[in-house]
Image 1 (tube, rainbow, N blue to C red):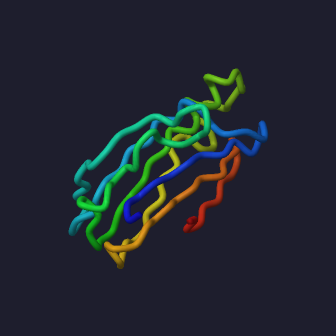
Image 2 (cartoon, rainbow, N blue to C red; image 1 turned 60 degrees about the horizontal axis):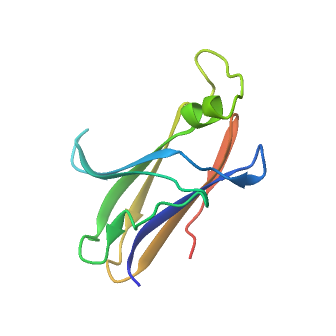
Length: 118
């Protein structure tokens, strides 16, 4: 099923990251970012719906933003001021609008990784 989904895994605590604010933007020429969706991760670290469904998925450049410092503060983790990671931004391209794109985030207060999932 085509569309764009994400999930967040907390590698510090070894669990899904519930309650992470996520925003999706389409990147345009210059510094223009068109907001497309906003969500919060559920108990499984996923959004309840795809960020983009098949009808809205078009080729182009996109940006996902994850508010990780707010998540860790909410878990009682003491962070520096400013935190090493505050908002994690992942910029990626969608070439095939008929495909499914899954962009997971594995995160701790001091590092993260991502990949194109299934």
